[in-house]
Length: 105
Image (cartoon, rainbow, N blue to C red):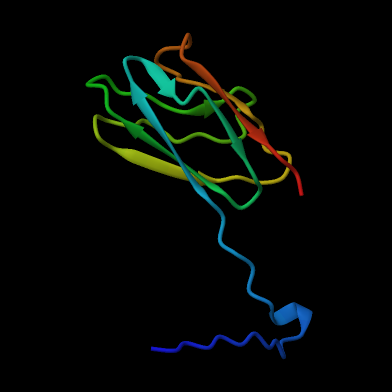
């Protein structure tokens, strides 16, 4: 079977489809965010999944974003924005901390 692929683009720049952002999953387990540090780009999605029996949050230290309370096996997501606060913690367990490093375009 012969398969020929040709690439011809007639779209103007404003009609070019940009690739979707990457989804990063952070598990909350053992009263820790795993992984503790995530490198992300604007447009990426960060999803937290609570694997502990205790409730948790992922809340920016500057108060600009928050997942709200996550019960066991519940998940919440945010989309990374340029200039987004990177340091976050759990409001119920302030010793639980982590960071999102945003690579600006």
